[in-house]
Image 1 (cartoon, one colour):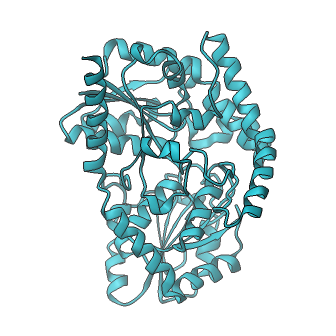
Image 2 (cartoon, helix red, strand yellow):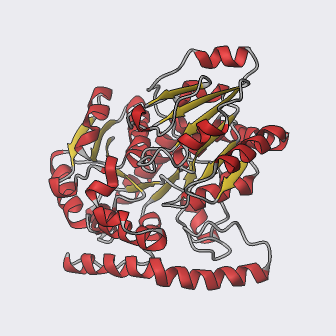
Length: 435
């Protein structure tokens, strides 16, 4: 098959798309990726064809404040609402225009798009007979409506009573008023100007439900129950772990050999504008712990951006090879990124996660709900909060036991098998319908 994968130009979104493309290429398919120019150097060396986004939506998101200055002036729901509109919804016309041009030169049998690539919507909202089959690749927690009615993004665990479900329903109304409805109305205005039908549901729910298949790079044990009518479309495919890249400090193995605890600290690739939010307080929290080895990664930022002295028990790198390092990690300390968390859980690593922006509350709450770690509801946890949370995870065997149980569930979902199988089945069914 010829498969086109499409992604918004954001590192945490493109990385799982590249992993998916590698898997599909290894399965014998011809693959290409349509995304930002900054990722060409990652894509083409892997033998994958690259198509750039149109210049006006080919954002450099390494410094989101420089690209979207207004984003820095906001916080909470207003910041999230602005970001979704400016980065994802306003890009629809240009992304779609570029997509049509790409398909003329690369007539795909199948399109795989990630959660936020909204340029696919004009195709999804048009006649199915005029487009190839389309598969949704989740790069965050499930966007499908929950069984208990809680709104996505609020970071609420599953309701345990009818009274709690009623409270969730009230919270959903407030959430819809503040975020969901304004975003949906904005998207509908743009689609109307393009001569396209309005969304059938909230934006990101529509992105999922309009697809022919939903690929979730996770396992059922880390997701909340969703409505029964949506279950059949979901295929869990396990963790999407990038190919080996980044540093693998030799001291890690030596530290494990001598009985030291290895703490991996990461702020990801979006929330790393200020490394004083997590990296610096983590280093300071354990500066006197000779029984700890602290591994910190800046997610690409210069090491000089870490606003504190690097202690003797600290190793800092711009990038670390998680595939090689995670088996030796005792605790992950990170902003609650879906990719980072699911990769760690696939290796049975318990964690302390933090963060209140983007999807962090949804991911963090799932960590706490599964018992695989502690969630600190803060963008700036204190030294004492970090120290106490890490000690809590290390002092109780329950966290590692729950993380290990999830790793065993992840082991049953091999993305190298599940991903091609689900897509080949989808295209086979579509061809059968045509015949």
